[in-house]
Length: 331
Image (tube, rainbow, N blue to C red):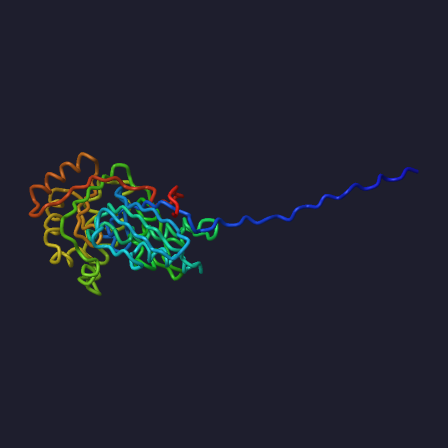
């Protein structure tokens, strides 16, 4: 009978060590957010399109409670340089939503989206702040697409601008008992956006105040049909865009407050171009069915316009807002 060998020394198994999240202080992120055009004619407070004009900013978390804000570009002379800045408010709102104290911030913004022109500048600022907070909190907190849309909508008030700014493309946005929701769709490659931007501005609040609380049933049915058709036109059949962008719910009611905008929309539509008020105005969005058609639209606008308009030949942005780590750090 043989004896078993004596057991050797037992090696201690090290306890698993949880990864320690990187401190937020000193982290820097770069954010890029597209302009948007909401409503698109009949899709009032529902449809939105992301466009290839971008606001960019870098946000750095500081070790103390300083707040440093530098802004250049569109609206730089009007935006505040304190905690009331919309990007800062959105960052604070996102931090508060997950119970994290907001650090000091260094914000450097380059604004390109025109302010007060119906191209989603406020929605872009909100989205930029939410995405900046998401990036700064990476490794500590996670945010789903639904979380991002909910946070942005809580500040913006409705999701039709923030949804395309977040996700890109054509978005359908709606509200459920659990909060806002969206569906992103890819736009047909034949659709070529053109935006006419004037020198004057329009307040979204004023534009909304011109809306009646009730509309005739036939007008509601008319817009339901055109909204459904517009989704098909933008995704499959650009040749239907003119009919699909007809509207009876909001543009006529706002026309008196934006006579130059109304004049340009009518002139373009009379020549067969799918022209609508961009968002709350006063810019005009043309959904052309090809790049060449945009040049023709510019000629029509030049002949019909009674005030100067800047023509922006754009593409549909398909990525939406982005956030990435930046090499800029605190000093």
